[in-house]
Image (cartoon, rainbow, N blue to C red):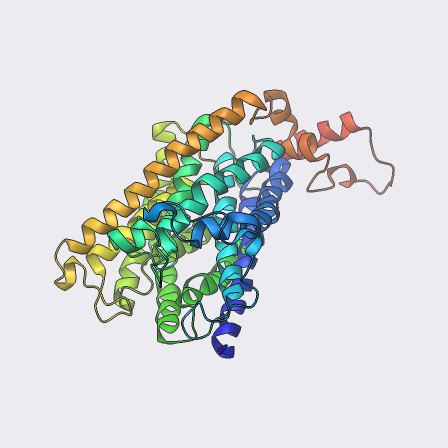
Amino acid sequence: MVNTGDTAWILTSAALVLLMTPGLALFYGGMVRAKSVLNMMMMSFGALALISVLWVLYGYSIAFGDSVGGAGILGDPGEYFGLKGLMEDTTSEEGGLPTMAFVGFQAVFAIITVALISGAIADRAKFGSWMVFAGIWATVVYFPVAHWVFAFDGDDVVGGWIANDLAALDFAGGTAVHINAGAAGLALALVLGKRRGFGREAMRPHNLPLVMIGAGLLWFGWFGFNAGSALAANNTASVAWVNTLVATAAAILGWLLVEKLRDGHSTSLGAASGVVAGLVAITPACNAVSPIGAILIGVIAGALCALAVGLKYKLGYDDSLDVVGVHLVGGLWGTIAIGFLGSADAPSGVDGLFYGGGLDQLWRQVLGALAVLAFSFVVTVIIGWVIQKTIGFRISEDEEITGIDNVVHAESGYDFASLGSSGSTAPLAGQARAEARNTERTLA
C-alpha cells in the first residue's frame, strides 16, 4: 500500500532539487562576465533537458538495475529501459513508496551533477559540444558511479560495490555528485586550457545579486537534496535537515573569517560561496554526524574551500567558477570527515575515529572517495580530448573576445545598445558587438 505522506515528501523533495539547477544557473550566471551569462545559464538548462530524457531511457536502469555479472559496477541498462514495468510498482521501496517517485527523485540528482561541471569551463566551450559531452559523461561516468554509491542490495538484486562491499557512507552524494563533478571539472579545465587573459585580466563576477539569489535557491533546494534522501518523512529526514542548516551556516562564517583575515574584507561572493561549500560538505554526512559534528564539518569546509579556490593560480589550471575548490575539495572533506566525526547516535549508527570507532570507517571513506575521483578524472579526460580532437570543444580566441553569448547564441544578456539612448533603432551587428565589448570592459 502506498504511504501517501512519504510519497508527498519525496515528490516535494524532487521538485526542490529540480529547482537547484535553475538556481545553479543563476549562481554561475552571475559569477561570469556580462558577455557569457546566457551561455553559462544555458549549459545548466541544456543539462536539465538532456539528462532528463537519458535518465528515463536507460540512466535509471544503469544506476539501479541488477548489477551485470554481480560485480557491483554497472546496472543492467535493459532491465528498466524506458522505465518499463515500473508504472504500477508500489512495493519496491520500503514503506510503500512508489518506484516512480524514487525514479523522479534520483533523476534530478543526475541532472545537477552534470550541470555542476559546466562552471569549470565558463566562457570558452561550444554549447553543442557541451551537450555531446553531457550525454556521454552521464552515460559512462555518472550512471555507473550512481550504481556504485546509491544502489543497495535487495531481494535477488545486486547493487553497487561502494554501497555494499566497501560499505562507505554517502547519504546524499558527496562522492557520486560532488567529488564526481569536481574531478570532471578539473579534467575538462585541463583539456580546454585557460581562458584568454587568465591570471592577467580581471574576470570578476558581473552580477553579485544574481549570485546571491542563486545561492539562496541552492540552499532552499538542498533541504530536498539531503533530507529527501531519507526516502521518508521520518527522524532521519529531520536530522539531515537540521545538520544541513547548521553546517551551511557555519561554513559561511568560516569562509568570511578567512576572507577577513586574509584580505581585510568579508564579501557577498564569499558568503554565497560559503553557502555552497557547506552544503557540499554536509551532503554525504548529514545522517552520520551530530549537530556539533555538522558545525565542525561546515566551518572547516568554509575555511578550507576559501583557501582552496586560490590553488588554480598557483598550479596553473583555469577552473573558471571554482568547481574544484568548492565541490571537489568540499566533497572530499565531507566524505572523509565521516570517518572522524561519525556518531553512532546519528541515524547511520556508525562511530568515527573521534567517537571510538577506530580507523575502520575512515579507510572505507577514503577509498570510496579516491576511487570515484580517479575514475571520473581519467574518463573525463578521455571524453573531453576526443571531443576536442573531433568536433572541437573550445571556441576560437576571436570568438572569446567578442563574447560567447553573441557568437554561439546570437543573443546578449543585457541590451547594451539601448543604454543612454531613447531611440528604438538597433545598430548593426558589428557595431552592437563592439558596444558590448566596451561595456563589458567597463563592467570588468
